[in-house]
Image 1 (cartoon, one colour):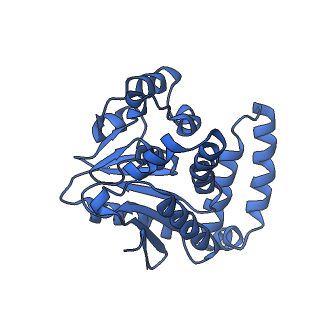
Image 2: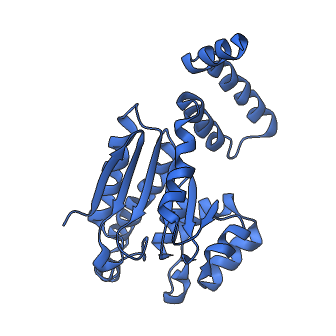
Length: 251
C-alpha cells in the first residue's frame, strides 16, 4: 500500500494520507511521500489548490509506534535529523505557491494536528477533534509552535500546548485555529464548494498574496508597506491583472 494517494480533478489536486489502518500516523515514508507530492504539485502551473485529506475515519493521529520507538533508540544527532524532516514538510507547505488546505475528518492529534496547523487553511467536519497532547509523554510540539503562535494569541497557544487536551471543531473555529466547520453528512460537498472559490479568482494574485503574507512575518510596519507596494506593482503587470482591468473597463 502506498503512503499517499494523489488525484487531480480540474484545477484541484487532492493528496490523501493512506495509512487508515494506522489512523494515518506519520512515519518517515509518509512524510517523504507527502513532501514529494507537494513538490510535484508546485510544478504544475494549472493547479489552483492542494487539498490534504486522510483515508478512513481519521485525518492523522500523529507519530506511529515505530516512529516513537525510533526516537527512544536514536542519538541526539539522529533525532535532530528526524525532527528536521518534519520541519522541512512544514516549511514546504508555506513555500508552495498555491493554497494548501487541510480537510479534517475524525482526529487530528499531535503531529497530525501540527500538519493541519501548518496548512494555509483548515476545514473540518463537525465531529472532528483536535489536540496537541505531546506534553503528556514529555514531548514538546516545538516546531508547530512557530506556526501556532502566529495563528493564535500567546495565552491561547500556551493553554493548548501545555495542557494537551482534545477540543472540538467548533472550539477550534471559535478560537481562530480553523476556518470553517461543515456538517459530517455534507462535508465532502461543502469542501468542494469552498475550494472551488480558488478556480474563480486570479492564480497569479493568489500566488503573490500567499508569498507576501508569509514574508511579512518579522517585518517592521514600514518595511511591510514598502514590500506591499513592490508586490502591488508586480501584480499590476501580470496578464491576469491586465485582462481583469480590460474586462472592468469594458463594462
